[in-house]
Picture (tube, rainbow, N blue to C red):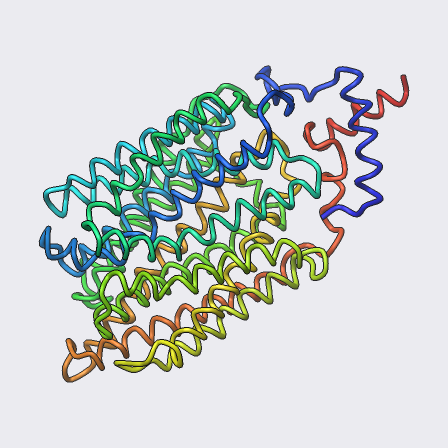
Length: 524
């Protein structure tokens, strides 16, 4: 974060620029970023963005507790259960960057409303599903809606809260709701499944989303980044989404086929080729690439996104396998399983809120080492689980550690990924940090499921509680390794003060242009 001296210097300069009527020139003739003022309270805007992001993250985990009921009602296989989760995750991850770009080009309000509308309609479609394929397709469509919606929420926050202290508090609130959504999703899923029916884990989005649509339509004001009104990079989006889906399909299939089987090798090779094609499209083909590869020259952004992959993998895998453990091994009801996750959800929320305040004391790098290390310690504790392990002596403690560690990580990770990014790339940075977390979750879950299945199949009785628990323990080991790598990546972040200069200038103007215009004001 900028030092008080730099911030105090930047504020009067920004005021001079505004009084002189200066705005950043639009790139290529496009419309510049609109002023952040207006009649809508920025805190009302923050509440809208937080609720929308909460819904999107909630749906990653809300189906976990309902999976056994979905399996029985729709005849889902074990792989089919994974795809109920991964269809949402992959579609979400693959199109997040497109959603972020759309927010910059076509307007944040318009993109927000469009994504929310698709998300609500897809939730309704999934709730009335009559087959496993129907449900999986609805979840993929729901993920697409979330991919358009999520980056719009973060872009609205980062472009409307421009002062350092206000931005820190706003990102803290946004990150807290996003971080707690996964854990609270398990609780809410358990309550809805037990009291009503598994279909209500999807139906619940409809009334909430409809109310949010009406409020947002009146409360939000349209704005867009100073980028050209260019066409979206659909070939790039399709290539990265298809590539990720095929890679995950190849990994998931190894629970029944060896890694060296022709189908596995062809799937992984095809997925790799599609991802390579995505890089070629971005570097040489697309006139307006979905991901300008030069953005990774920003050290903080690159390191934060690499961390997001590891944290996403650990988080998704932990919720998935803990949910299976308490239901399939310890025979918790859906309602009891949901309440078992409540302390973890509160720990995530506490960690996120505390992390906002700790940043001033620890700094980004120290906190991004502390958070994953604490969560990793909780996962190491979970690797000692045995069938029938008691909740209070064996689950409560590690779940609190994992929750606090993840909560402490979200705010600094988001700030590291978006700080210093010019306004016309705010949507890109927002989409990118969400994308890498979801990609990590999808691939991490697939790898952990493969490791868990291999450990269980190595037992003389693969379906036994002991064999299944051994598989889950191996998955927790892999999640702990991912967090250890994430903590190490935090050391690659720029040192304190290394990337502050752009943020000390007027945030409404892209770096370089801001300084030039302010120099003109002083000269006049």
